Length: 180
Image 1 (cartoon, rainbow, N blue to C red):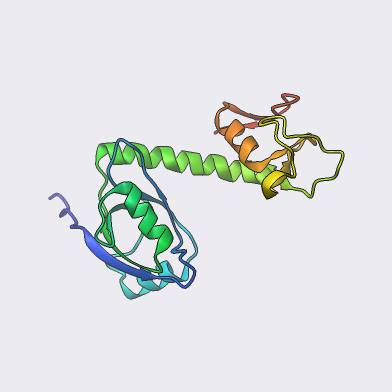
Image 2 (image 1 turned 90 degrees about the horizontal axis):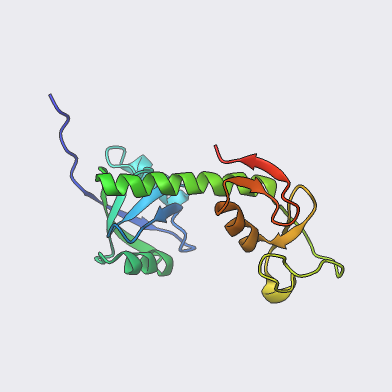
């Protein structure tokens, strides 16, 4: 006998800092937001304890936030509100599943990158970022050092790493690892 299809359920979260502890992803091919990672959050933890039959988990679909169903506006609601009413579905369609899997892989890449990058305080002898060519101290950007000793803006080198098949330095091509 097939398991019964679960129906969407409502979730109400409140957070003092407008951070609900849910990492979401979306894509132009789907109208919804996907929960990629449930992070350590008091709001989510409290909901899951109080509602064990309808927990918030990775791989769920957010269909609506505060009555809004447009993906971009849902993101705005999540960023701007301290209280959210979510309509969540627990079953992914094939296209949602593909987007979810891609987002999970991207999160794994960012975790691997963050393990390699050391945030540093820049010194006057550090030149511009060799990826974007802007000064390292411009606009208060975070500067990181990769294992070979070269320095970059964190945003720039993370974007570089994601575009490559290996974790390698944009300057000297030293390989730090591969995506597995």
